[in-house]
Length: 200
Image (cartoon, rainbow, N blue to C red; front, side, top):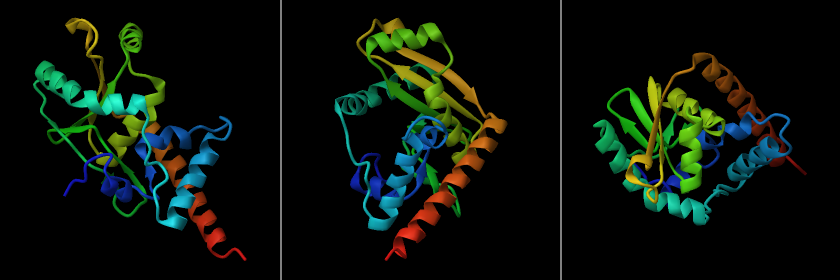
């Protein structure tokens, strides 16, 4: 049974896991306290049994409201039917991710709902943002699928500018490095949890 993204059950599903939406933090070496802060978050989740990231803000709420419209626009444009998904766990590991959608047997979609000026910026720049590479390649790794569509949507623009789609394939070298970095991160989490549990 799929637990709806954002539900209490979904937060419980991903508690203590390294998640695809946070892979960029794991890779953020030399970027201040980003990686260290995320590591402490996962450690605390395992120690307390409570999720720490059950928050939202106006931008996230807006994205949640617009995502069904983005999904419908994508389906109408491509003919691909998007199956909603919960939290997908890799077997025998504390790694998982929550795709915005799965397509047939080999594809998926990452949907971002953007403010109009950011949508125009995305279209002009082309490709997909470097900040989303770890998440998309991570979802390809977790699901074992071969392709992913990066979907950017802004309903406030004229119809011809509302939807931007960029197809992404697996980058095996990137995925190999990501898997290695995530393994190191999780080993550090395990060691920290062990240390805190035996702390006197």
